[in-house]
Length: 183
Image (tube, rainbow, N blue to C red):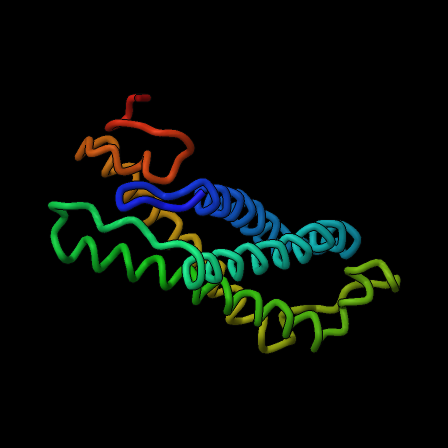
């Protein structure tokens, strides 16, 4: 369950991949909802988007708690230049900052717009124009930053796997692997 010096444990791996899938679904639903003009269709998407945001928040808090109180991360990859190690740490920290900022701006947008009742099924009616509420701006910027972080993170993992061939990608997967082959 816990991580070793060379590999993430099953709890960290599970939280990572659940978060990754949820974030991709969140980004897709958010960009889709932002481009819609039909209030009923937007409402249907946001009724998925908002609870998914809460799920991502819970997974993020769980992950932070896991690292803080229970587990330790594996050591950085030996032989990587210092700038790559620093970049990896910075991207991971930015992921947490952006996720928490997205949660705060999403909650702020819902509260200020009064759309919570509609999105949680307690009320009916057309959705407000979210662009009229200040937290919507950082929410949209955060989504774009999240896409950039996701591409950098995935690109680095693929670089390690296919270019360097160092088996790094297997550190964040289930079971034991030796440079890409099952052991």
